[in-house]
Length: 511
Image 1 (cartoon, rainbow, N blue to C red):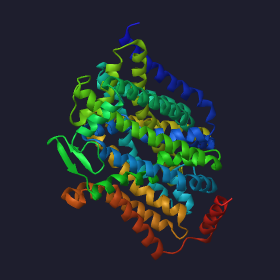
Image 2: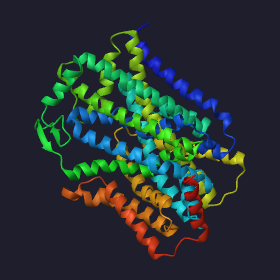
Image 3: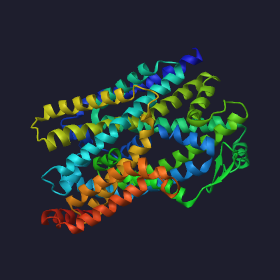
Image 4: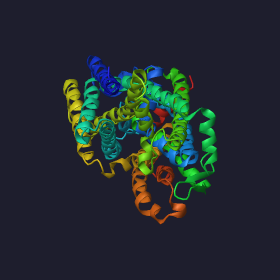
């Protein structure tokens, strides 16, 4: 068989498997609780890997190696360290308590949890949080569709729009058919494919470079490249100092985890709260190893460009380094072509695993929280299921429309959306789970301040540069947290029922 045919065949086989999984889970969605939360039946392995696969997106196989390829270990390394710490702390402090608390108050979505936790009969808290999810997730999903379109367009010369639509249709198919369970189990498979992709590129790349020592010697020979306190300057070919403020800004990425709806939903869905420790260990180990390997791929790519194995890349093109290595790999043998196909499927998996989770979170916000919660529309279980799937489809179509212009700035939304969720939901989730005196007024105020500050800091304050040029998540998170504390203290204390519920959860946590 022609080697060039094996790559697309491998990718198509992978996509067929994803859709088949979606179809297989169709009959398991008896109600909207199953569709959006899988009936709280996820085992520890699926919980851990689906949470991390849905979190990483194409950034793991494209963005992180690209940054390391150009500038070395500082920016990529501190970002990865921040994310690793955030991942571990999220599992350690939030996962079990959120699982217990969300079941106690009967919540199947993040807005549900906030509203039910504070007994907010006005539904203001539910409406505000659902609206925030829609604001940040629709364009976030669009960026995923666009990334898929660009991948296929680069690999096979397909028309961008056709490739993007095909990718979107596949994601929509298995998500609308199988709901949360399908998204979670496909995420498990996608995490395995992502792992295979990372290992394959490292082994092949080291071999082509001439050995591990050659890769490391090259990294050490470049000014500021193999350092966490300096960064390589491509323009001057020298080294720039990496200050404490910049490092703190990159570490702040870890705060985003506390407010990521698609990750928090996995905590709410785990079957046995006592197995969360197992999930935490699996998730933390996988995240640390996968990010370290992704950064090392950037180092490998740098030496491969120097010895002429792959072309030299600059600017945003550096993010295609893993694609270039895989394309070179595919030219050597049938086996390597199949492995290269898995690498491309891994890149696709990163994007798909995030997009499906975002679609479900955005869909649940509209159908469950806005239509049924805020506007109080009465629907049977059958109609609720139809509504859930219809809303998911509408949101996906909006994502396709936003992604139509392949050169649009929608790609810049990813880091901004991460900051948005981290600053709006993170402080509220923190105080909702761990502060008995917090109330609904503080929660609403904190959420609004967090969202506003993300925009203000990004587009107004940060433009002044200097000490203000830090990642908007950090100052917005701090402002939102302070707001929650102040507003909660100056307004009336939560009702006795709310306090009693909190104490019951605390008691159950100690069992």
